[in-house]
Length: 349
Image (tube, rainbow, N blue to C red):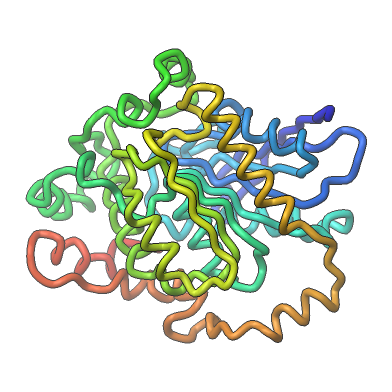
C-alpha cells in the first residue's frame, strides 16, 4: 500500500518547539490510529521510520513526536527534567490528533518501545478509558541490572542531582552494543546523528530509574488491552518484568510473546526475518482489535469501566500527576531507599 509521510512542529505548554511526524495510507482512510512513543535517546523520523512505514502500509495512521530534547525537537539534548512533562506533552499532541473530526470514530492505540513502553503505560494511567490498546515492545518496566549503575553510585548521584542535573557523568555500558544484534543495523544506528550517544545526563538517568520503579510497582493498575513483546536475551530491559506485567495487569485482554534468542532492539536491531516476524505479530494483534466507534460506544466504554482512576483519587490516573508529589512507593533498606525517598521533591512523574 502506498504511504504518505508528513511532518510539522508544535509547541508544548512551556513554549518548546517539538517535532512531530506521521505516516498515512495514501488512498484510503486509516483503519485505526497508532501513536509512537520512542525509546531513550531515540527519535521518530529516522529510527522509527520503518515502523511507521510498515504499519501505514498495513492500513494504519501512525503518528509520532520527538520528546523535548530528543531528535529534531528543541531542548537540551536528551535531558529529561521531568517524566511528567514528557508524558503530558505526548498526551496533548496525541489527543489533538484523536479529536480531529476524521479520526473520532477510529480505534486509538499506543505503541511504546523501551522507555516509550513506560511512557505508554503512564499515558494509560493518566486517562485509563481513552486508549483502546497498547503495543509494548521491550518496555522499560525495569532497567536490567546488567546496565544499571551500582546502587552505591546511584545513591551518591542523588546527592548532587540538583547541583549538576545536566552533567553527563552517569557511568553505563554501551546500550547500542547491548541492544542491537545485527552489526550492519547497529552501525546504521550509530551513524544517525539525531540519536543521542553520549553518557546519560544525571537528572535524566535518575528520572528513568525512578519511573521504571514506579511502573514496576504499578503493574496491577494496567487495565487496557495490550500485547507485550520481548526478546528473552534482552540485557537492557528485563523480560521477566514484562512477564510480571502480563501476570499482574488487570487487563481482560492481554498477550505476551517472548522471542527466543532476540535482543532488546526487536524492530530495528534483529536480522530482517526476525523483524518481519515481529511486525507480522503486531499487525495481526492490531487487526483483531480495530473497529469503528460511535459517540455512544465511547460513552458506554467510560460508564462500564470499573476503573477508579479519577483525578485526585488515590491509586488513579491522575496519580501520574498526584504521585508526582508523593513519588513511587518507598523502598526499605539499601541504597535505593534514599533514591525513592527523594522523589517527592525531585521527580515530577
